[in-house]
Length: 164
Image 1 (cartoon, one colour):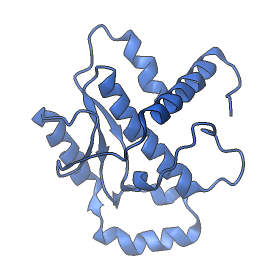
Image 2: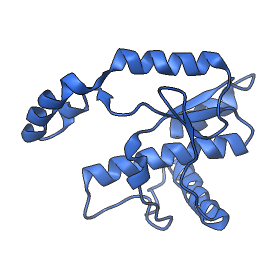
Image 3: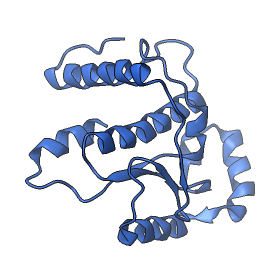
Image 4: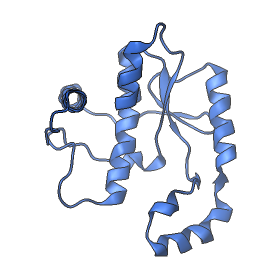
């Protein structure tokens, strides 16, 4: 989100399409506007799900701010994410990998969607081009959430300590 926020003001013209990469696990993400950064009880899967939910909601926000784009849900594919996991996960991944879609196939799906120019504005799109609605949140809740995110970005840019 920070990179996108840093790049947008410097563009002479509006980007044609902004794609945020999400994941099928985004539906397990939880948002607590008063606690964007977790200091205790860190769980890698929950943190990953939360970050993917943030990206999905960010696509929606960018659309509401006047930009074209969508969240891309590549599905489960052979990505190499296992490298960051514990040893037992490496073994499980090796068993499952032959049944997963290749990263090349995922990239080709994204390429087709981008070049089709039928972007689903701010929605979730999978590698086959199927559009799905995002989880719904109360408008006031989203406003509080995005104000907190904007504060975090501003604090980062100014060198201030993040507000927890």
